[in-house]
Amino acid sequence: MERTLILIKPDGVKRSLTGEILRRIEAKGYTFVAIELREASRETLAAHYAEHEGKPFYEPLMEFMSSGPVLAAVAEGQRVIEGFRSLAGTTEPTLAAPGTIRGDLGRDWGAKVMQNLVHGSDSPESAEREIGIWFPAL
Image 1 (tube, rainbow, N blue to C red):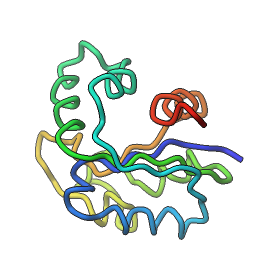
Image 2 (cartoon, helix red, strand yellow):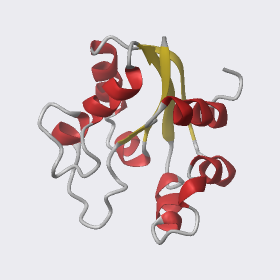
Image 3 (cartoon, one colour):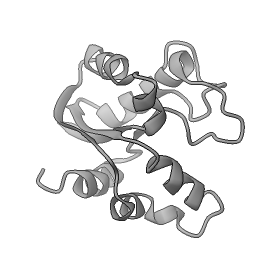
Image 4 (cartoon, rainbow, N blue to C red):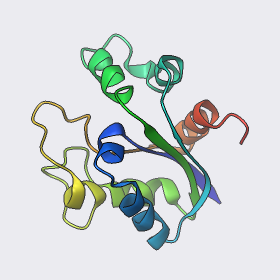
């Protein structure tokens, strides 16, 4: 079985969309191995977004991701990485297809594209690294 890290970002938590997003993931047939609502520390976020350090959007991203609680989860299932990313939709909510999390629930925040409700690992290697950051005991 494949595993992925899923984050419901502060905008999704603030808008009370966690239940709907988790429901869609379970309806797709994936199983949750771990779920935790938490305030993300600067250290955790720095490790998670290390590849973006020094880029113009890094500090605004860090500020946004620490602006409120984040729901961190590990989901498991057949091709869950690819499947969740398809379920999430394209990163820009305005362009995300209807039926996807971002297409149905996302809002157009203009230049604030990082406010796109969810994050999902993009590869098995990223999933392993990210799960180790957010859930070191797994």
